[in-house]
Image 1 (cartoon, helix red, strand yellow):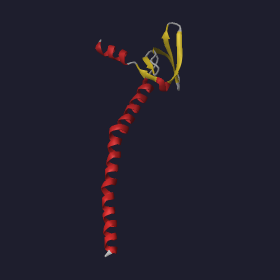
Image 2 (image 1 turned 90 degrees about the vertical axis):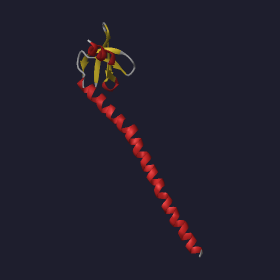
Image 3 (image 1 turned 45 degrees about the vertical axis):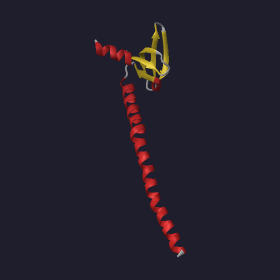
Image 4 (image 1 turned 90 degrees about the horizontal axis):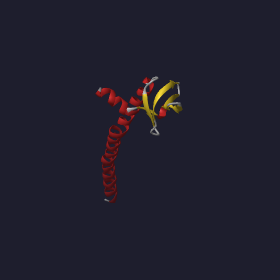
Length: 107
């Protein structure tokens, strides 16, 4: 009698673990599709934009400095910030200037 009770408790414990595992898997899938995947898409898009940047493009750095690309290298850009003021910045810290793009579209 006692062994039957222990077996029933053990069997019911195994059955209740399955919904918990399914819930965890479902939460991970939701997290992936709503958080990780969109971020990966944005990162690919920004990388593609950086590869397409060329001399004369208006850009903004991660630090908020606006300028125009003067020279392009494999790992960096030389950006003219003001007349006779140029800075070299890493390729990863440069983004297309959204304001300049919006003005060009409106014209």
